[in-house]
Image (cartoon, rainbow, N blue to C red; front, top):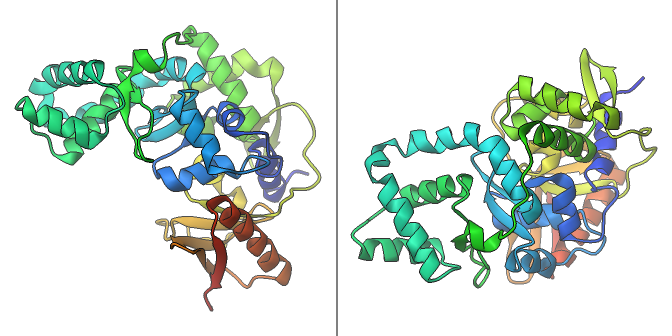
Length: 355
């Protein structure tokens, strides 16, 4: 009988945490989209899924436009492959854009003028930071607060007007979508729903239809249409009164490496809602508000909250255990800290709080 622990371990493999791949582009393409609200920590979410994590890998993919950082799927940042961004926006924008429009309602009478101005500015000079655009708009008499400009640009991303440009000194920039994705891939709606279902359950499975509905801001009706279109390429089983979909094949026997230090925005956590807590089979995590920005997983189970602090010489992982940790679990966490620190080129330090 399949257990929550079995599903969680299986996901480590599906998500490439226990079966890393060659590089950034393959990770992003395989996962379809990777939440990227926190740029520095989400970069590790991608790198930790590669066989030889290095910071330049994602930076190069962003610079040449193979990978974009944009608002898609939900009203937040994601890394997405350039081949996927157009059909994903076509599919999910109708339910995501109203979130931005609601917040931009006080500016509704200025939206056309502002959108045109941003388009003209990026046509004149691409790869502009948000600060660059704020100054240029102010020169045109359009003064926006930082929050207003962020929401405006997010809406324009969802509409396929702008996208991420070439990073400048590590800072996010904006460019015209048409310049970054000159040959967008489009799918009709049924094709898109089927492709999304196939790729989500392959890269995130086993998972439920409600997990996908949450992840992609889709209705259950649409998700079920997608599953029907991809069902001949998927497998499923019943667990805890729900159907879990996954790529064909048996559950993996083991999950190595066993330890992982991740942000709570990582796909291993944020990629689900309905069945998120298979990573806490013993029910030791309070189900209320998230109290930590990171987490330590051992053998696919959440064992501690984690906070990362970076200085010039070291990266410190401050852990607050959710229960007593066994020696093997502590060793796994130290190994995970070492991999993360190597990626950053820093010395690893692990602090475990008492109690």
